[in-house]
Image 1 (cartoon, one colour):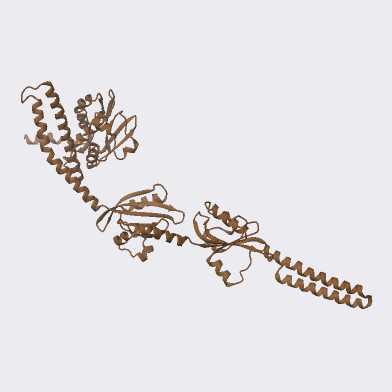
Image 2 (cartoon, rainbow, N blue to C red; image 1 turned 45 degrees about the horizontal axis):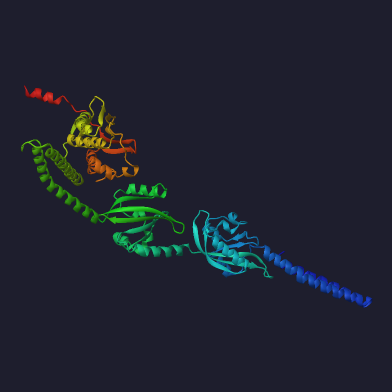
Length: 549
């Protein structure tokens, strides 16, 4: 029944009662006090009915109807700027306003008739307990509460919950008002984090993973790129020119956003200054997904590295001449050129000679690395038969293998494998790989050296059955001064430079080198070169014939 209907119903009862009273009073003229008493009783009954039944109907109307038109501008403004939720006496949602649905992404059908826990944060159980306790006590509850949208996005809200009461002060539900504080929370936390990031000398900026807009930049980044701090939101990642290989960086960013990697590094050049950039994806419930970009100035680091390399190279050059002289003198004495020697002196000279030889090899390795790094390694590039070069390496290293109690098995096709390379440098590469295999193979085992030829490439493989290389060390095994285990270094000798030199020489020839290894089973190193066309072997004879005419 509507409010107007209730008013009409009350008026009708009063009119009916008045008519009945008039009739009874008229009858009282003929029947005395009995009719008058009946009239008084009727008036009292009608009055009681009107005063009890209709207010009860009104109360039931107010209690059972949750969605009613807002009657004033204050209430309209509230629903426009805040999220409003009403619950019935059973604690079920009976009304949500458009503001709530628009921000959270829910449809009304997702929520009506369900508990407010449907959109509550799973970690806010203590907050919900406080809300229930305040509601039971009839108190107004105010505090921070998190709302989880349909897509999983979390909203920080300032919440007020008020019990809904009827005219008799009976609780029959509640109205909850949420004010979205997410932006203010993010801004506050960004300011706190920004204070720390501004202290860094390295340029740092933060990019939204959704829009790729720059959300934050510290002072160093603003100065480096010349950005206007008040217009950072207008800067997009695509506007930032810093990567030397931009397509590769954008591809890595997509891999970050897809969850395939958690961070990556890249080379950057800004204002002719080299940087090493690092991008990491960080996701937080209250601020969403952000790309954190850090740039580290490499100019100073490169200058320090150059100074170190130059020092090492200078020392190596200065050491090489006296070491060569010492080694030569020791060799002459060992040969008996200075007279007959006792066995004890020969033994001591042998030790001195081996160590002098090792020092010369170390100096040579350092000088080779310095040349490779500077791009000053000289190569005599000609077309050679790779099978023949590797066969010569195997033959020259057989005595070395015997010292370690191992043998070398060479397997290759009989036909030549033509490749363009510097024969001495490739001999150095293969010798290094064979010597490593000999050092780390158990006695009595066999090292397999093979040469295979494909349509476009030729490969050299050196495989041993040694202890293998731990997976954690395989990524850095080609770095300078890298050796697996101090015990091996002391027992086997070596500087940890050999594989780094191998990598540098092979790549200078346009080839590739990699290894596969499993602890306890051994290691296989593979070197690949581009295959060359077979040279014309007839031209020397033709020239000789022409010259003899």
